Length: 190
Length: 190
DNA sequence: CAGATGACTTAGGGCAACACAAGTCAGATA
DNA sequence: TATCTGACTTGTGTTGCCCTAAGTCATCTG
Image (cartoon, rainbow over all chains, first blue to last red; front, side, top):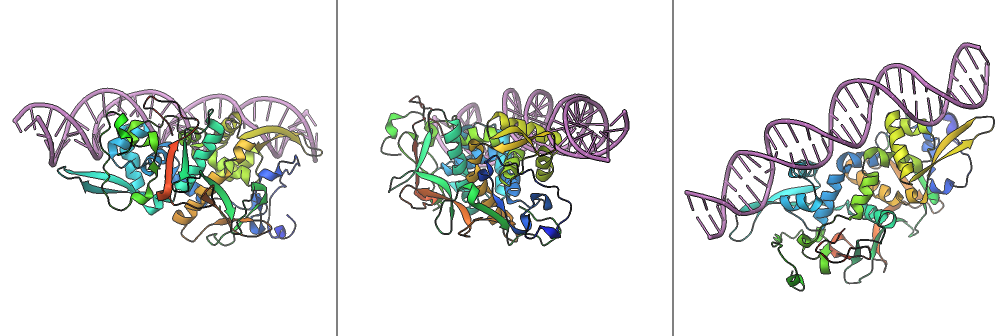
């Protein structure tokens, strides 16, 4: 908090008691520096959680990735009741992660199916990252299921990577204001 | 559902109405093939969500990555009440994602700080993946904040990658049973 | 035409997450 | 000794997620 913190007010000093675990922390750059100087009220993590911040939404999406398309299958495979499945699927459709469309099989009447939109399938890396963490820390005997790249056969995982191709650990990351930050006012965002 | 589905029972046919959107779906391999033949009751995503499946848990972890260590700061920066912060922090400590330890600043009395454990910081890729999705789909003006690799300066993102270095789209992925799957019985897991 | 689906909805209730307001308690500072 | 601060806890009420049980309604099949 030396280079440009003078322009800001209040802010008591951060503890910064060096116990060597600083490496698990991102470095805050520029206007974000003393964490006390801004609030994360437009945080994209927060917004994402407003949409998929509950258990059943993510589990329904998991099922969609596994190819499930029908209402009853969603409910039984996720293990939730029909009323919850209905509510949650409706919400996911309203938010544009799934689309509900009628389809017809030969000699069958018209039914409904739920399909991932681009917005929905773009969440896949997050789901994989979560699965990977669960595999590592919560699955005693190892991963129940694994993902691989079909054709090349290699296992697939979620990772952090920079534009230069490095895989930086948390301690080498820097957080700075992005293009969507609101200007000035002590209130940036995350 | 041709090669090895004969050994399984019940299971009505999947819709498989070809509308060309199959590419947003993972291919289920081997024992997992007809999705109706197994239940995902040991799913690592589900287990992960039992631990961090609520809004405040993930937001508290976000703060921990931003360097927050003190109780009051967690509460105000995440924007939750003290009772929730206390409950959620306690749970995260109990589950081993954070550790609570006393610390002392010169001439100050002993206080408590919360720090990420390895288990906790291993969740960072999932958080970044979620943030990235929120940035893309829910942030009108672009990302409020961005991550970069300090030193090399390049932007950092979460991605899926296979052992051969490819970045496979969802349609090229295959899901198969992993080492932690329970044997036989029509009930595998995810 | 009598079921059987598939895709829901309605009713009623439990529990967990959250909020606000207020209180506690230990140690530092004035 | 009186007050302040940090880190909580207690009390109380609301909202939301989820459940079970029981309809509904439009086809399709026997």
